[in-house]
Length: 294
Ligand SMILES: Nc1nc(=O)c2c([nH]1)NC[C@@H]1CN(c3ccc(C(=O)N[C@@H](CCC(=O)O)C(=O)O)cc3)C=[N+]21
Ligand SMILES: [Mg+2]
Image (cartoon, rainbow, N blue to C red; front, top):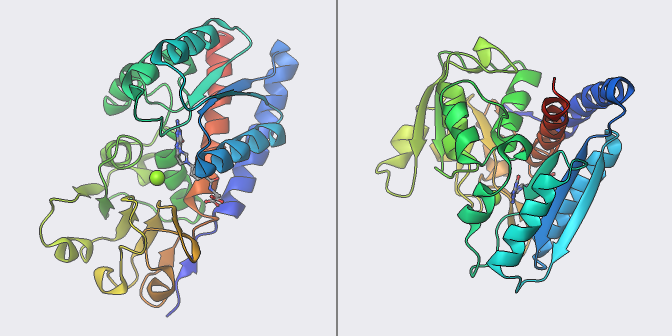
């Protein structure tokens, strides 16, 4: 048996075409071109790649982007002032402060300062609260990308055992919230209603748990952590990890070995990461629509 490769590029291209059409309609109706402001502090090479991919995607779907580069040693006050300036700028629809921030900065305080209506990451406490109550303003980009990949390949989650490795605020926690609910805002009830287990560094007998997974999501940030013996034959494996190793980019799963066991698996690169960027475009359009009063 060899696994189906869940190619994120195909999914992303299809969704970007659809977003581009809706951007076009929105522009025709309102005269407004949706605009994403990205704040990049410091010179982290991975962050530079991600931000460049986001700018490229904006251009592709007909949106504008503005990049605000700031030095590694920017003060908390200056960064907060930049966020306030972007909050007040009517030409800016979405604000993204690229993480991680340097250690001397208080990331929570910065993210909390973003106007919730421009919070295209869905990191603001009021947006996280609305998501947890099943009435989101925005869906968080990476979890939404995971759901969109599953939908594209006709792999429903309803009634399935989903095991998520990792409890981060950016992936594990919001993805668990989304998949345990009765319905997905964008993909319907077949892409919700899962029995979700969130495992983490203090979970004992991890392999016993992962072997129960119909859908296994790896979002821990450890290269090749998920080995073939941890996967139930035929299971769907979604790899959210992006690790830079001496042999190049690699995910949180041992991809080559899993091809012989899993039913389907996402590659890295070219998997979930592509969708993260595309769902950010979706949220920027949604933000522009909200701000236009629709
Ligand atoms: N405020 C904030 N929001 C984020 O959404 C956010 C963040 N900070 N910090 C870092 C993580 C990571 N992330 C990715 C974005 C693009 C790719 C991406 O484009 N991946 C491509 C290329 C990967 C590469 O070449 O490095 C791929 O997987 O094919 C991956 C990961 C967004 N994040
Ligand atoms: Mg990561």
